[in-house]
Image (cartoon, rainbow, N blue to C red; front, side, top):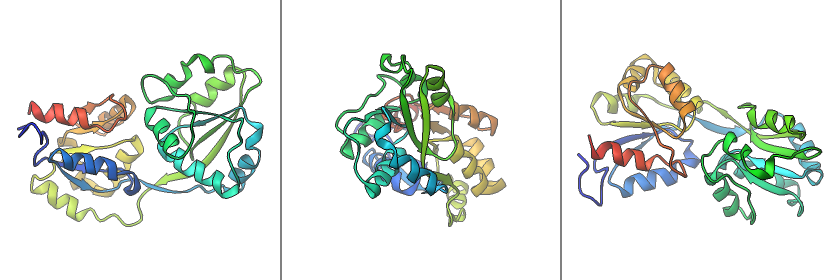
Length: 261
């Protein structure tokens, strides 16, 4: 079913659930491989609620020794928030959770970025030798509202003082019409689903309702991290493929899966 070598995903309908502003690259890559990407953003990126706290943190930015960005979204929203209020302190080092985030930071003008060699999660970043001795260090973590605490907790255990700069929040899209997606599922025109977070999966199940949930459980799901796969198992999805490739665009696992279908 792989099709011509130049179009290994020829005719494959793939549901793309990333926020609209983040989906363009994946859609373009899928189209280049012959697939039919179907956009259905199941996650919306919105401004953070506590703007006063964020402003206070950014006003003290020069006091920090290290700034960590947890995602490309954190890079975009965080640096935009800084630009509104001033400029990046010249002595403030920058680290990224994963190569995708590091690329986003460089594209936004950050020349030097500390990044892990391997996976795109907190554990890989925390394994770097530069983050072992943190006594007396002031660290600011740019992220969305909520999320995992392992990065901050571990850095605090190593002696750092950690502050969050929560510059955005994730939520349900305001206007998401599930009817066209349900029609495509019923017609057999969606052969794969992609999801980049557990929250996206939860939203997708909510937005598509009981009928859509049945289709989701029967359709192969492609995710970039085992944590998302675990949530998918809890939701009853039967076929889950975890792609560990950087930048986690899921393309390699999609190509491999449908080449052997």
